[in-house]
Image (cartoon, rainbow, N blue to C red; front, side, top):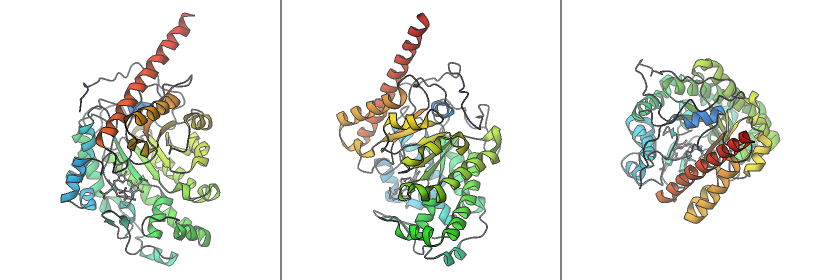
Length: 412
Ligand SMILES: Cc1c2[nH]c(c1CCC(=O)O)Cc1[nH]c(c(CCC(=O)O)c1C)Cc1[nH]c(c(CCC(=O)O)c1C)Cc1[nH]c(c(C)c1CCC(=O)O)C2
């Protein structure tokens, strides 16, 4: 692996976008919950892209970047169970840093190693991670009656302090190399797991709930929302510099049901988290509503409260930009299986994507490269490197072309 030299990013060459919504980002010194100063951030590229500012290249990170495709992760997994890693701040820190260390200077963000299912656990449900099978709830919510089993009041500091400790520890260990992303599952996706008891082909149990028991479904979604707001706010206090909400099963709902059972809770989360943090502490928020191509217009509306919309691979860059109309930063959206296609396929698809989202008259801003869903376990570490390097190269090329075009115009 060739490790590039440390780059310095200038703050002065960019002008803040007038369309950056709702928040300001604290650029001064930030302290952890004990009052100890966090290391100064050396690479704020992704935060500037989220704010809508022009960037000199394209920031990039990858969903599930700390995961089974990494041999160093599999090594940790041999000795420790999944939720043991999640609950042990030292282990979560080590694993979060693995891709950052391996792809030194190629990744522009770290995402805290945890899982969306810690919130159902905090609500009182048992969740196991079965090797090779994924998450499993021994006692899912079979009917609305079962909601009695959920904790009425959840103190996130009592139930999930290990996540906050992992965030604080990781933020120190990162030494300001890249920002740290916190996350949570969106209410519908968590409800789907809580009712189905695990993954599902049809989600027929969870979907039957929303049609048979709409009132109780809203009650459940609201309870998950309330915990999620506290959970996300506390992640920022612990040191998270950006937040992503994973609505992984959005596409299981049609547009009408998404409108009722997903979107209102996503918006509520973004608005309440920002209101509770206030303008001084608010951080950029990303929504990933997988499969909800029909909701891009609404999610791009500044009133939704999101700064970044993460796209799956069902969008073309031109199509997504046409609908989103520069109101938010777009993130995504390479089909994760392209990384199984070999170097030529990766370079070609990545180049097309980066030029599509970052190029053009309105380009050089509002774009963060990522995959359209998590990286697959059978991707090689070299394929990941090809993807990251291609994003860097093409992003710089597009930015340079843009600047010379602008100079050309000024000459005329
Ligand atoms: C739906 C969902 C889950 N978890 C998550 C989502 C939303 C994102 C998405 O849609 O992929 C989110 C998640 N899960 C994990 C992270 C860590 C941070 C990262 O590197 O992105 C994040 C952000 C670790 C993990 N979460 C899980 C692993 C694999 C654990 C193992 O080694 O067996 C990791 C690294 C397990 C998990 N956890 C979950 C499933 C369905 C599975 C099993 C399938 C799989 O392995 O991908 C629930």
